[in-house]
Image (cartoon, rainbow, N blue to C red; front, side, top):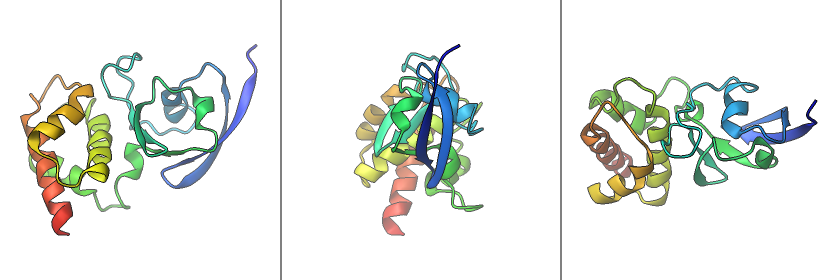
Length: 159
């Protein structure tokens, strides 16, 4: 039987404690132990971006991070993006401009876009395309995603 390790971390502003095996990934703990199922696991190799989270201020694929690395760290997931019932401007623009279809990639893309806008509140279309290149979408063709991010960035700068 594998030894379990005690981890204390902050997820979406709330402190959490859990036990995990040293080989467990962050996405497994988020979805399993913490029941935060918005973060999706697509490829388990860091190629699709569906499991993207903000980990101590950095965008990461949570399938490539061991859960024990979260000890003492801060994590932001899709569940923490809205403020209660008020959607984040990115979420609102994705709905208004049809920036999503099946929804598997959407949480990862929204988190990645949020990380971009935290670093650069006025990105160009090209900068958005490069930033989101690690997030694969099989449904939308990306154009509506890019337009949604551009519109949200504009709204966030005005407000």
